[in-house]
Picture (cartoon, rainbow, N blue to C red):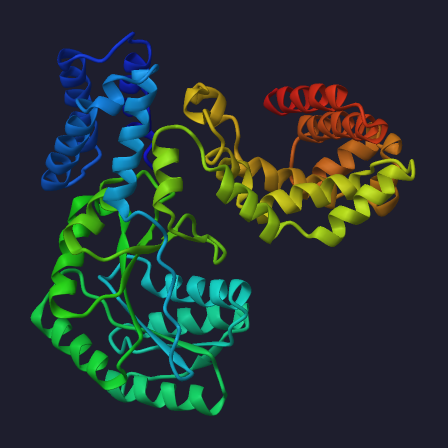
Length: 451
């Protein structure tokens, strides 16, 4: 998400950074480029107009003009205005209600609403330690009910059944009552979507809202629809007292217009952003962090939080103790590292949050393929326990057997053994405490992964 916008803004602001001082001419020229970049990202015109006006006013102010590095001051100003457009700070869910707190999910068909219900349930379960129930009031799509049931079972969420003969209001009321009897903290109600906003859908969801009086009414919207997403959200907001927005499919080829338009047009905060298909791919929306990513500064805070939440600390400590005792790093350990990386969304998810990643050539970024991660794990899984513990045994016929076992080529086995050896060397340097050697090892390992 935002790749094109990031490239355009970074290029424009880089020119300003090299200027000795800011003048009306170079400010005007830069803001023209910024305006075009925002419009190409499908940001709504009123949002772009207001944004440019505020940046121009700030750029011509004394604080920027008298700065020792006016180009950097201008970048800081653009970042600050981006944050304001998207809502200043993350607004968390309000769950202060007599249990169960009711969350009503609204949105058009195809926005990823049902999947988002499951993602939000998992997030509340893992991060807020809540007991969560889910129910589908979508009586028009039997597949939606079955899909939610499957996801709920996979995530150990309480699922309340419904069928096509019931009315949505009755489904919701019965589920809330059942959740109360089971002493659940939260119940999330999935509603029917349509291909477009219509009177029948609005009447149904208004009746649902009036019947259950949810504490949170969240609008789920596909970020790939650009400023249309903001206009659809406005239509729902006119009919319902929305409390927030969830943007989905932000990992796709989205231009970013929805994220930059929706708060301005609806006045409602974006509370979460979906960044992948897996049920753990839902993040709280932090405007300041996203503004940094848009400007190519990365999002190290989110990366650190992700590592803290998803890395198995017990396994990491066990490996550290093993290395400190002088025991060798084997292929079981390497496989565990790959699995931990996969659990965090893969290399591409992590790279997206690193500062300066937009300056890395696209050809090099394309080589970081998360499918390769799964193939590497499969290669190690095809080895015997003895081979994983004693990698030196893997020669000749053993390599062929491993390749056949996981349906891959001999060169794939050779490649992962080469990467393992690099990682093993790095672990030895880590044991000695020589940081310079360790950093050199990391760089060599990254080069090896690209070959």
